[in-house]
Length: 151
Image (cartoon, rainbow, N blue to C red; front, side):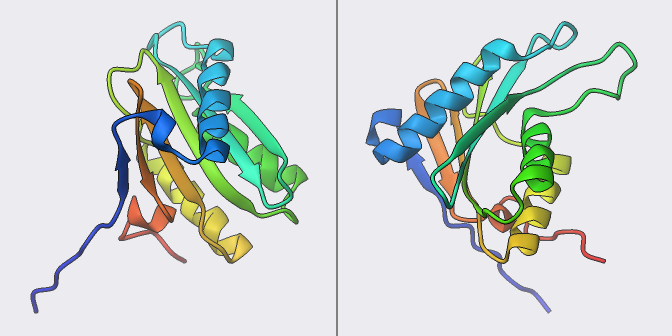
């Protein structure tokens, strides 16, 4: 049986067209790229989350000499939040990179972890993928990984 999968998302040609709270989150993700440790790929990634309480946190990627021991910015941040603020649901996650020729999209492992967090907290996470002054936004990580792994 043939089925159709439809993907709805928002695209902004200018970050300034985002709501102010999302612009701030993107700015925090961009700032986090400055603290990345990416001596091998030279691709610095920053992520920032806004919790239901309004608190924001950020993280960056970290590469290790003993590849693949490094960790993406998104997973670094989500694991920290899950360990310390699991009672305060994540409303939005912004991702940015340097260099930034286009929007920064999460890798497959990060997509699965974002979906895992959505399932645990029982609510979707708005994912804002930014770069080159633009942004692509989905209202749930399940839009990024429609055929997720599930035990």
